Length: 409
Ligand SMILES: C[S@@+](CC[C@H](N)C(=O)[O-])C[C@H]1O[C@@H](n2cnc3c(N)ncnc32)[C@H](O)[C@@H]1O
Image (cartoon, rainbow, N blue to C red; front, side, top):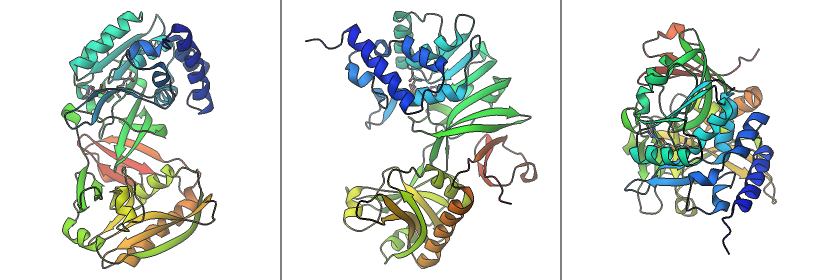
């Protein structure tokens, strides 16, 4: 029996839209209508319809020689909330950085016949695919070109909206130059290893965030490529432990490695989290509150062997303090494991003090910022300190990114 029939596709599309509403990823009728109109399966031929229409699944379209994903049709949930963040209206001109075809078709539905969509990708295999599928699905009017997104696409600028669909470490000048004065840029920006899809608008010579969402993306290639560095603390195969760091962060790897082998210190905050409560806001707070923030990534066998207390491949918030470090952890407060207390595990000569410092910041978050949103600002590189808002400053190649939180009275 062939289950890839148009009837099945329509039923699954209805279910996907209902799921995206439940997940609060689709919030507006306009975005819902776009998702109902575009047949997603035409952009991922050969995949099962169940896979294509699953709200939280991306369809991987290319991997590199190490098996790392470098291109995909993104998961509908991420596409939906980014389109909501962008607030696209009929008649707008939109640039998409990173093609796949499907998202460009959704944007084409949102801008209508009076608008214009341009989609660019660094990889000609991907633009060829996108061009073919867009034509087959009836979206010939979308412009597709092979270009390094770092340069944007001046040919069709200015844009009312720019949506970047690859994870980036910086905001190159081309994006701000090609953005209309009252435009909006939606971009998955990595700050101290944490990626958030941030909707920015212009305020004078800089950009200010309007909202942000947790997300994960394939990494930007080309001139803007910037990989996290790894400081390996334990390298037995299968149970590796490493710190993920930005390239401007210098740490004493040999001493931190030695520290991991020493007995641990613990500190507990008295702050609790529900079993299903997200902690992405806490991670962001810690990244902005402590000067030397890193992510401690560990494989599960490292936890099973007691080398670390918490194993997360993406990493756990960590404070580096010279030859010592402390990372966030939790302990269950009941047998049903529905409530957890947040704490820190420290290693090194100042293990206890470092763990206490991290725990103190967990308490500050709980007391002052648990329901707050951070504000990101992006100023051009070279902007003097006294022109930046109070908060953590993270220097990039083209910009100075700040993260600040509402002041407590
Ligand atoms: C997640 S995919 C894009 C998904 C697409 N927007 C969709 O329809 O779902 C990310 C894409 O970004 C592209 N990319 C990576 N670096 C780039 C760069 N510097 N300029 C343009 N595209 C880039 C990759 O080739 C990949 O195809």
